[in-house]
Image (cartoon, rainbow, N blue to C red; front, side, top):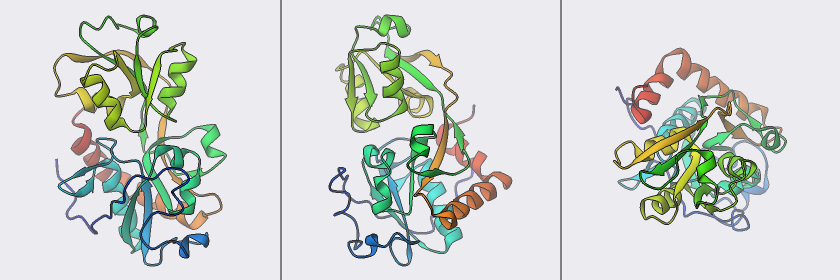
Length: 260
C-alpha cells in the first residue's frame, strides 16, 4: 500500500494528562487556551488524542503514528498550520474537556447522542462495531459464557457501556487500549470487549487468541470539534471529503488495517 508522500510536520507528544491536569499541560497554551477562538495555539493545529490506541494512534521511533495521525496530518496540511498532538486521556476527550487545550480531538471516537451534546462531530470516517476476544481454552465462547469472567474494557468507551448493559458485572476498566491488551496477554483477564478495529489489530499476529463474538452496534467514528467552532468543523469535513474522493482514505485503511 502506498504511504503518504511525506509526513508534513513532526508531531509533539505530551505526557498523558488527567482530567484536572488537562488545563495545565501542553506546549505554551496557558494564556492562549483561555481564548476559545481558532486555533487554540497560534500557528498550530492542536489535536487531543488518547495514545496508545493501535493502529489509530501510537508511538513508533519517538513519533506519533497511526491511522488517525495520518488523517490529522492531512487536516493540518489543509489548514496550513503546524501539527501539534497532545496525549490526553479518553475521559477528557469524551467529556468535551479537550476543548480547553485542543482545537480537535481525534482518537477513534464513536459518535453517540450523549457525546454529541458536548461536542460536534465530523461526518463519519469509519464503521466500527464491537467484538469479544478471548484466549483459546479460556472458556469464553460467547457473551453468555463471559458472564462471571474477568473481561477487560477501556474506561469511558462504548465497549465498557455495552459490557455493563449485557450483564458483564466483573469488568475491569483500563485507561487505554495498550493496558487493556497487556492484561489479556498477561492472563489478568479472560477476555476483552471493545471495537473490532483495535482489538482485531491487537490479535492478528498473536496465535491462541480469537474473536468469539461480534456485536453489530452500528457504531461510526467521527472527529470531535468543540461546540460553536463551525470554521474548524468545516475544515475537518473538507479534508475527509478530499481524502475520500481521491481514494486516499481507502489507501490509509489498507495501510493500517490490511485488506478486508
